[in-house]
Length: 346
Image (cartoon, rainbow, N blue to C red):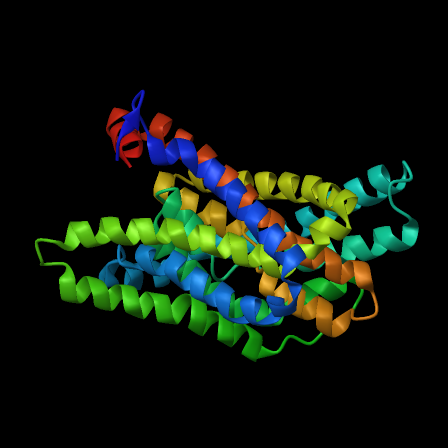
């Protein structure tokens, strides 16, 4: 890859690619809305698989087994993800929605209540898919990220209904099949494919070239997924532009705070950069698929609850990419010149 002033040309152009993918997705959603359902049903799993699978080829089975049994690290993640994150999200949502937006007449009381519930739904379920992609982009510990996802996929079946009841005063039932489907599509299948690829090809001379090719595929898969998500869910941005920036302020704040709460808590507990980064993204990334499914099933008569959860994934990708950018800068400071060379050359 040619460099411009020492920085990879791909790195410089990547934000432009992301913006272009967002614009293309919104354009397709506005002009070809008739096929949004099949696009969402098949396109998102396809794109996320090829986002996660290349990262899984970097995992060593022994490291994964060790991470799954690391009770201390898992305990810290569970505490941050279930005792801190949902209540911080709800607190931030209450402050911005009721004390700022509603107070200044930007939202009515009825709409404010529904938007608050929608953000609570976005905040209670930790991510069990794309967190591995963000961790990989920021050079975090992938074995730790996979172990966290495995544990979260079990824990959230019980905790999500309880947290929704406590924070939104609504009783919901979470179908285990929703979680099981996500685990199979976004964890088990990419993980098995990645481990098989590594086992078969790791001793081949061309294995490093394959990893580089998979890295390019991963980038293309991200851009494809952005197009598909904005194609299938982007009507919320076009129909409710004012709601988008208000939800965006809340989400930017809680992603930023949640990530750094997890990252710095781990650093204070003497974890290194890769482990702390894995914890930070696990704490901050949210499971928008579960949130949307709950909104549609339990709040079908409350339009703005559904709209808010649909806006969530549209904002999550650019916001999480912003956190990845912050971490790559932080990694250079933490790890020194050798990492600077690796990041620039990427």
